[in-house]
Image 1: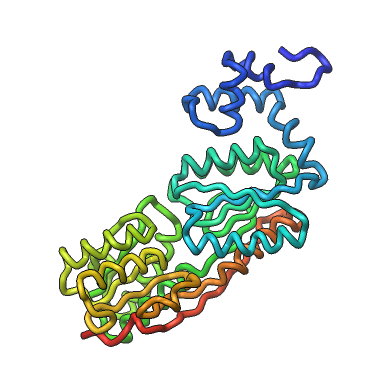
Image 2: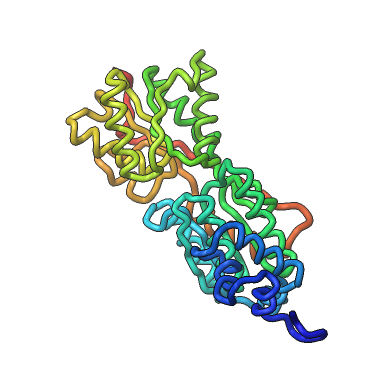
Length: 342
């Protein structure tokens, strides 16, 4: 136990929790190798003893830390690359260093990454990418970030997250509605959707937008084939294979991000399916390569680099009493991958 008046040490937490020093360190850093029950006990003891506050406070008080922790879903996805570019631009202007972490769209892994960044005493945490439809994990993340902010840490997110922090909100639902309206105006009714798995709020919102467009034309989303795969190029390939095999009369495919759309186009090309003569394809985000594909991809443009800048600029502002919200807007970009229904 710590001596009266003495500085609290990690070994004091370990002794109270009945674990080794190494186990206590891994638990507080959110690293693998510790059972959830043991990790929860160590974190509870650290809160009771006040240990969590000390490592934060030495670095965070007064905004001393010069490191920004950026959590992305997938480092090789152009969507996150462009967001990271915007974060890095502002960080350079402010003399800050950016540390990028990869969550793999796994909410448990993302929570571990957040704990690791907090343990590493970064001054700002940014979460880029969708929130999760997982109340338990999101509640854990909210508690961790609330404690972090109470001791001087700053947080902002990109996407819809139930975390009670400043947020940049991509125009996902309105963008999904624009894609649906575009295809319906071209006469398409046999529409399939390539969507992601994992309960991502981005997918939920984009599907809600497509559903709203369908309702205006007397149609329903649950009447459409929706194929759930990974939110990646390979996921798009797999989705397109299933659509061609199980729904051969499809005339349009909505891919819920551009990476999936690129995979869809690759599969259609391999099967010698004409785009857009036989099947139209749309994506979402307008990543930098979308205009250079053959055919060019019709998609919804989000200002991804600006989104990264906006997120860090929000985090650098003095914390407000209520979380701030910054909408992004969107634009439908029509290219050669869509045409009239055959």
